[in-house]
Image 1 (cartoon, rainbow, N blue to C red):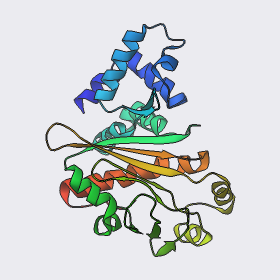
Image 2 (tube, rainbow, N blue to C red):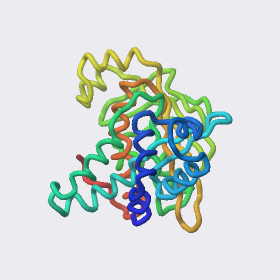
Image 3 (cartoon, rainbow, N blue to C red):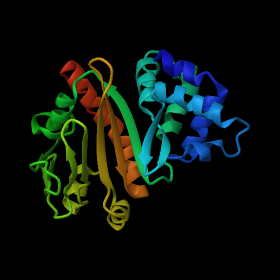
Length: 260
């Protein structure tokens, strides 16, 4: 947490976060454009932000894209805003909201660090004994590339031929297509009204990817990348932080977070 405060203390780094919040997924060249700052300085500031987990990076071909990562701001908000008068930390709350605000981007990226092993994290992402606890969701699949997936979420079964496993490299990378937005699912979850449900159905089917990286010591870096249309991304930008935070709590403490 000290690294986060130190990173946010510099106005140049806050300016870079503002630029990413306005348009996420920028290259170093794009971030440098219009800034009165040398490319090397921008690169060093981004390295500090990345070390504090405030910025995540994703490679797309030869391009390295940078994304605001709201996870540290969520942690600060949970640690401090709940203990002190909100009026005294209004600026921090505004920053948290800004980092979580939906923007026009093709994907949502969220990174966290978990005190666990790659094997245990893989199990938590695939084993119904885990997923039902922190997500209230299970999957019928053998987790082989190309295999179909039937979703079970809060008593609703969602089956579709286009729900498939896209990548399955145990302990390092898992990717699959998102579930179909059925009327039964919408009625059960009450997550979307008819207008937004219609918008979701018009968007291309989205995909989610989990990248698992072993760090020094018993720590694993988990990056969740969700690619899809604007209506879906606005929803998952609020949903994934809660799901991954509960997953992290389960692996580190044995208990999930209280349902919101």
